[in-house]
Length: 450
Figure 1: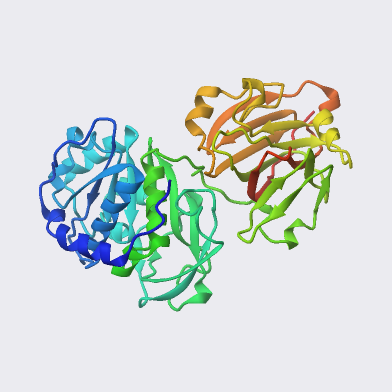
Figure 2: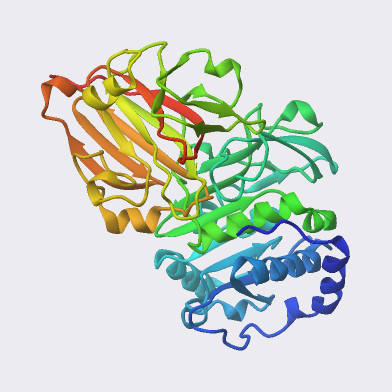
């Protein structure tokens, strides 16, 4: 479970106790073999943030509730192949300047290539400007910053564990970095700054501030927040950090592929439901946080404004029940109808329920083809946590990605169920099934030949 926040006094007390730890030994006593482990590295060769001790204390506390152990060091000698293998992720906590020599850099590159995790916090982007591998891993280098001030953060991805607990906008005070390049084409942007909400933004209105990516075999998460001591006592920022670390260490899954060119079909507002139509019994309720939740059924909420041929459909979903036995699905390729069974009989359903037989469970093309269960199981977040589907239809070819992992590859051969033109919908299955959806978006793709 994610942290619900801690008292500022506890953070300050822990910081006093740990103030000298960051400069201490690089090789701490071993933790249990089954436990996930995180190394917090805070060496500085340039500006030094006085919030580093607060950050270390907060990360240790997050580890206690988040299921991982934390070692903290400023000794670059920790960057050896043997020592790095002990850790599931390395947090660069407001590091600055050149902090690793060539041998240590090669060790860290090997660690990432072998599946290691990286978490960059704030001035991690002000680090190792002459090391191209690191620049790609961090996603962007620091360029400048205005004075510390309040700003509005637009949360673009509300399924990733670093941002899933946040509202669509997040108002907070920090030192807001401008970056030398925009990472959007290379990384998956989780949150961006509204440059009209503060003074000093220089990225022409597209200003990513937190992102993630799969990078050369490893996982990389970066957040531009964390300059101030107060950040590490802020429950929302702590949950943001915890979610980023959980993803980096592989304890939570998310789609961190770059995402560009999608049009929202449902963006969390009542207005965006204007193109949708409910058929059959039951319905969906729209919650204050922009989430649609199924109630009753068997019915279908379908996008009636138009049909689609070749496209990539993305949407976020989660099951409420602890056992995963919440039935729902995403329907594609069906004709317009006021009967929800028309979608069942004339289209295809990508299933959500996690408890049925292989061809009728999560990721399956329902009753036609099972997902790759081994890949599905590794990619699936448990009930109560958000997942992301990409359903890509090109001609009669239907593929399914779960949290960025391709788990199904299906080709239709039934002329009565042609995928070349059809509608989209989400199912409300029954009184005991509660499934939630967010951020339904689509990108049209070039039409496929016959």
